[in-house]
Length: 258
Image 1 (cartoon, one colour):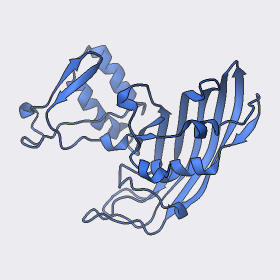
Image 2: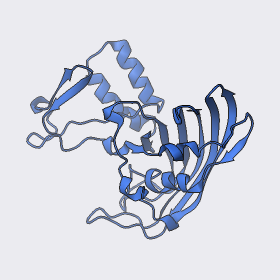
Image 3: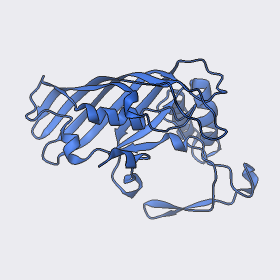
Image 4: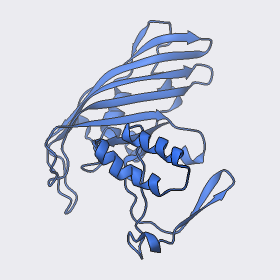
C-alpha cells in the first residue's frame, strides 16, 4: 500500500498562504514552527486545514470540534464540513503478487525489468489526476496513451533488493464530463516523467521503502479556471505506514477489479 501525498500547482506563495497559517496558529516552539513552515515553502509538505463547521461556518472563535489524546491516537469529537486539501490525499493499493512484479524473478545488480503495464495504468487512470483545479474522477482506459516503468536493480543485500524507477505516463481525454454546476474544460491530460527508488524484502514479499514521483504538464481544470494550460503538476507516492489509520482502501478501489 502506498500513500498518495499530494498533487498540486501551488508555488511558494500559494503553499505558504495555505499551509503556514495553520502552523502559525498552532501550539509549539518558534523553532518548531519555523522548521514546519520551511517544509511547506520547499514543497515537502502540504497541510490540510479544517475550520468550517455546520453551525458556525469559519468563525474560529465559535468552533466546537475538539481533539483529545487517547493512548497512541486522537479522538475527535464534533463536525466539520470542509477540509482544505484533504481530498488531495489518497492511497494506492498493490497486492503482494503485484508488488513482486515490480522486480525481475531473480534480481541481479544492474538488471533492468519492465513493470507490467497494467500496474502503471492503474496509477495513470486512478491516481495521477488533477484534484486541485478540477475533480479526481478516473480516466477511462482508452485515455491512457502511454504507461511504462522500468526497474533497475541497484543493489542486492541478503534478502533486500534496492531499486531505481524511471518511466513515463501520458493520458489524454477530449470528452471530460462536468458535475452539475461544476463545469470544466472538456480536454484534460497529464504528460509526466516518473522517477523513484525503493527497497523490496524478498523474504517478506513486500516493499520496506518506496518513493515515486510523477511530474509533468497537466491540461484541464474547471471551466472558469484562470490558469492557462498546461500547468506543472506533481504527484508523490510514498510507502504508507503500518497501523489502522493507513489501512484505508483507495478512493477508486472499486475500479481496480480485484
